[in-house]
Length: 141
Image 1: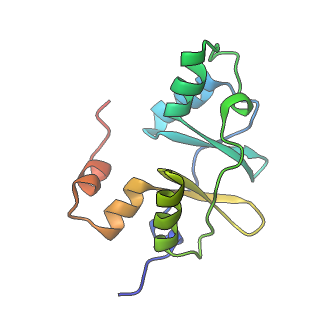
Image 2 (image 1 turned 90 degrees about the vertical axis):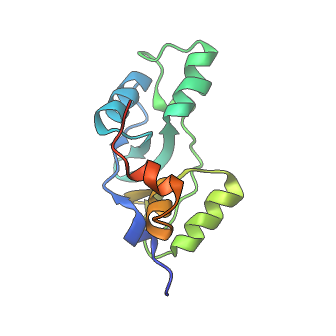
């Protein structure tokens, strides 16, 4: 079986916010969309990524005010990204190598077109796995 491409497993049109958005705005977007990350963009270009864990560990635990602190203060600005034409195996390798759970998907011009998560890959590559079952279940929190 030929390996799937990133475009086959990614979530298209991810939630994106500008670097000037507050941590509260990012958390509200995550809650509303039942997701754990927001892509940080300048216009349509990738500027970074922020996760729910980043908000807790890099901001709240450090005493930052989430209503005043911006994404530019704590987002991972040197985000590793994939292109839609790369293989799903490339995504798995990058996640494993860099201990990541989510990767932005960008065109050659750095335009954000999607995000691929560990759950996306599990659901497509091993639908019978426990991770796939958990990832496919509706949010419960």
